[in-house]
Image (cartoon, rainbow, N blue to C red; front, top):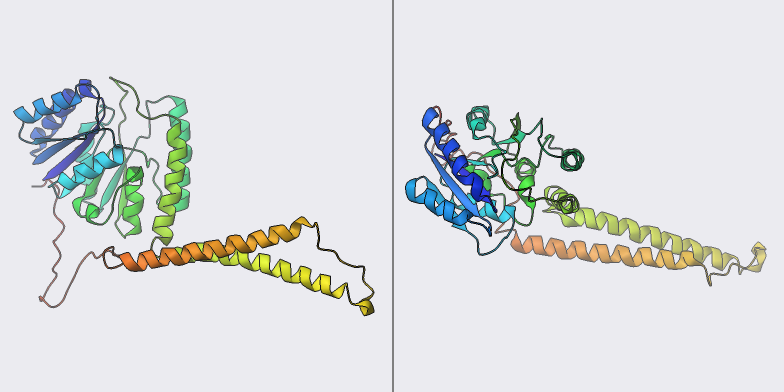
Length: 333
């Protein structure tokens, strides 16, 4: 089964058309599918449309939030409900073309675990395209997962990924990065991006700042999530040593200047800003070391519940591999 998870926020005009397109694709290729619409606190008639679709099509399921919790929460709720071996996500505004679904499934057959769409030609205003390209470059550079369009809402995953990758905040755009950090194989596919027909974009300039902060979080999670002292302790120790070394040098110079046999001018530490700076570096370094130790204690406490590794296969004891073999795409079945 292929599960299609669609977050919805004030998209009542596009839902019928989107459902019709997906149903036509499924019928043409013989796919066994389910469509999970997650209403993220819409203030229009989106939920009534979803209820109507579910009443006439047993493959449609709907989830309604009490208020707007964000796209990551909507996707997380949809993933929790998904029963398919493969899970696709696409936006409800009709800019993602459901006719790309067969190409995604064919790409997944290349032994990939995640396929991310790339809107190579975008039908968006420049003030959305330019920041997005800068952001994608930053993510690819800092994380090592070289995708051209981390923000693309059309992606395909193996369901097992979400047993290990947890979504919260605004981390939905970083699922390929989080999955790659656990050893899953990530690919990319150029897709068609259609002009918006209804409504307006839900994202403004504030997304740039939020995205950068989320990027720092992901970089820390993927690089030092299980060993926070390695980064905090290194910075703290470096800061502490610089401050301590500087203070020792000043103390030696002050002491030597007061010994007559050296004939040096008296060195006065009073009123010198460098003393305060060096003391500040020592205090800052000590704080970072303390925070790193607290982080290590938290990791140690939660370690039995949150594995720092990902198992792709097992062998032995039962006389053979105990993992579930990779399944073929819905099209091949």
